[in-house]
Length: 418
Image (cartoon, rainbow, N blue to C red; front, side, top):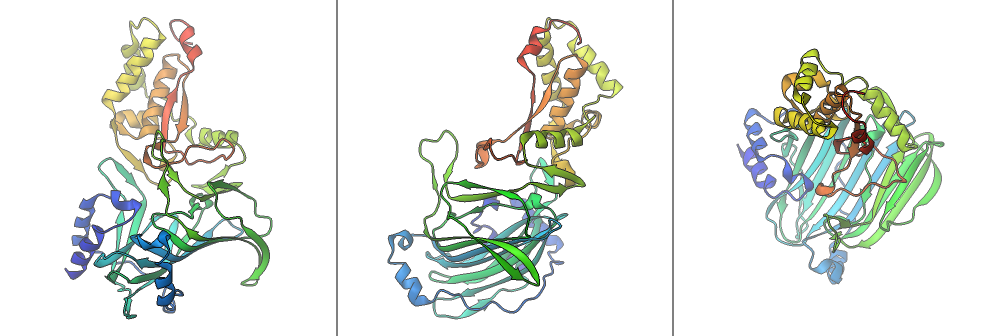
């Protein structure tokens, strides 16, 4: 019970993007939270920033009024020749305002493709007392809500002994089996940073692209020998970095930030190979995984015929078929494995009366095709959730929505099919 009480106290103090995780997931704790195992490593060394340095830093207006200050953050990504990679994150953070109790570190991961290899953490009190991480202070939950099911999870670690002036120090490692999970890095985060470093190690000849958002630091590049192999190392380092801020005058939520985005030339995902050289490469990949899925069942074809019977023109047919799908298929997203990208067959979606955006779009495309109206899937990125606009010069599969596109000329072709 103590473990559950600690979790609840820490959970409601969560300072992260994962606050949207449904609170009812707390009830899962009653079924037990065991089973989380970790590779043991030597204990963390003391924080590299001493108290005298912290006191001097707090005289700087950049840090003096901050809720917290990241004293040092390092992200290290090591990519192997087979496309697997390890991400290591190490953080020292000063707690500037009293936030009694616990400090939470949520780590999202895809359970079929990523593994949290290790975690280490400690709290250093203002008096210098070290409070090590309690290995029971961890909760692993699925990311669920009422209409959305996927194989993503979030593992949250808790450090205790948090008071005004404490320093938290933690380090963790994640292994990933596909470069699809290679994330960018924001130098500007929720709180200011004294030092921030991103280190990338790749095999010689590894091809990738970099996109700068805002003004991240300029990288250094060198050849190194490490663990008996040759590597190319890129290193970005920043100092005295302000917290990100909202862009004024923007029509949508947009952050002023300094961010690195990465994209390999190609990677493997769910048994397919995705190339990212051009947008046409991405379109070909999607056509490959969606091929034939718009095909209707005989039952659905008959329903379409009856629905459009008597329509005066193609515009009315489109409206009727749109309403047919909208009123009869509930939005439920079950995105396990390749289901996060590949739509379910239209026949399945109609039979089960539920599906996500791409399932419903595919059903509507099949219905329009049966009615003789050309229609195509359109991958889009919804910017309502703090998502940047698409850069036309940086092909990516980072879409989060699908709609149906009907070309304007389709309405100029008169009645009937074809």
